[in-house]
Length: 166
Image (tube, rainbow, N blue to C red):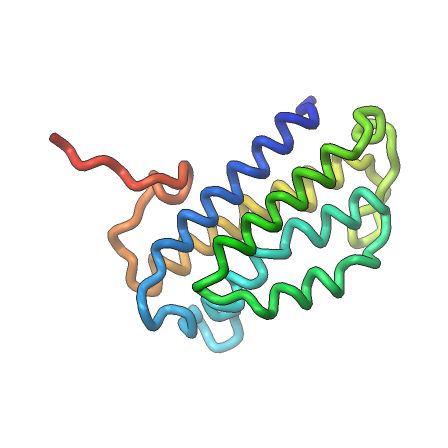
């Protein structure tokens, strides 16, 4: 089983990749959306800044009372403060998870959004880490579809630009 430090490290790795992908925006991309019914690039970026903090609070506190203020704060995110908002979410997640006693990860009770019971640790993996991975991939695909055909696996999976061949 993954321990608390490994979970935090993995979450912070994902937030770093997402921040790196944010540097790949080109002028005019913020309003782009794959189809009329899907999020725009800006809406996805805003969601990325709270998609982990909202369920993390719910997992640890076993309620969704903190959801509205965290979601409301994301409405002020734009391409200029996206990295700062991702950093703020990373700090919040790190502090929140560090405060959870180790025993609560495996024995503390929480619930999935549809009501299924689980441990706090399961909730953090399923509602925090997995969505970060999934929405990171969506962000990468949005960027590719919106015109960044030059980005590839290094940017998506490691959050680095590949070094030119010498």
